[in-house]
Length: 117
Image 1 (tube, rainbow, N blue to C red):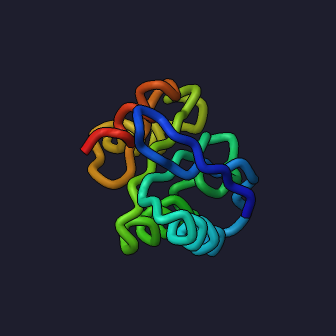
Image 2: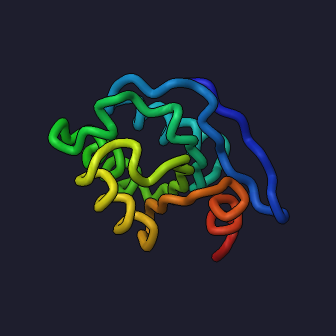
């Protein structure tokens, strides 16, 4: 899994720069965070496979749960709230208030949240 470490406001975070194909790719991202001693992860929604946006596949829930189990704080930017159907739009509404996984409309807000606390 290709990642890069970036620093924002004096805080380091890991950014996923590869496509995520399987739920188990979460383990690779967790390992990358551990290797860099970082518990903050940025993922652009373009990295997720179609299964992530189909909540009936359980991909999103399982992926996010793995991150939560390792206390990895994840911020994701979604270009459109409505591009993936009504159920996913409801999921995003909830994720905009999340504690460990949060959805954002733009990268600057995502990074600011990751760098807080």
